[in-house]
Image (cartoon, rainbow, N blue to C red; front, side, top):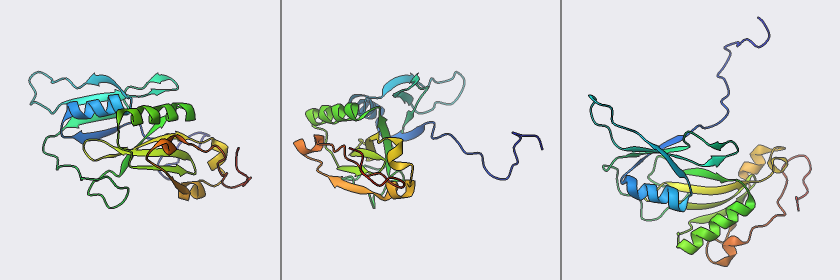
Length: 197
């Protein structure tokens, strides 16, 4: 077999998740959340095709990645028949098929600005956690889907022992001014175990 040919011995590893599609009860209400709260940009709407049965409304959203806008990171499909959302969001034991969706911000500074913006808007913060690979704030959308707003810690913090980084969690205050206090002396997993100042 020539070098570089596939061996078909297993699946090809993907480079990541391309996009996610959520069913939502009210597309305007969800649009407001994903644009005015999370900060995604509406990039397109599915158009009805002539001569075909009508389809639900579907809108497409993108963040701004290192190469600019993506064709879409998130799509919303309107389905008014969804059950009502739970009264309170929790990480565990929710009657939802999707636990949460993580949204990445480009830097610690951008993430802290986003948290301050949301606090000023009166958005309810469900939980704040320093993970071993991200620092994260959890909120929820109008349909009850959990939304993690995160910035990623430097690769050298977590790549030495990804499992240990994934299992590390320090709960932080999720109300008041303490929400905006973010530690920079983070533990390093595997290899050099000293904290990064």
